[in-house]
Length: 87
Image 1: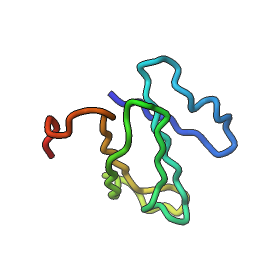
Image 2: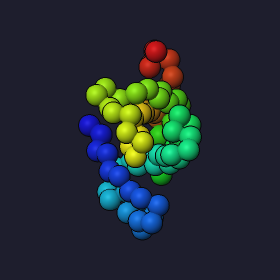
Image 3: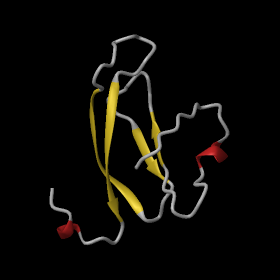
Image 4: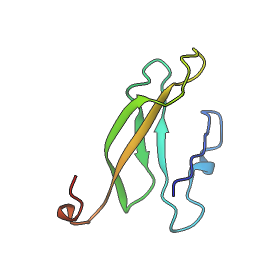
C-alpha cells in the first residue's frame, strides 16, 4: 500500500527522508509549466523507477490552479530477475 504525501518547494528536505528502513521514498517534481514531464527520483538503494504513465485523473477538473494528471509509477527492484515480472 502506498502513502502519498505532498510537499512544497519551501518545505524542509529532511521531511523527504524515509522514517524507517522498510520505507522507500520516490520524489515527484511537478512543474506546472510542463505537467506531462515530471521528474522522479528515488531515495531507495533497493528500487528504481522503470517507467511512468501520465493520464488525466478520473473526476479531475481542468481548474487552472490544479494539476488534473494522475501519475502511475512502474518500480523495479534493483537486482531482481526481470523474467519473474512479465508485463
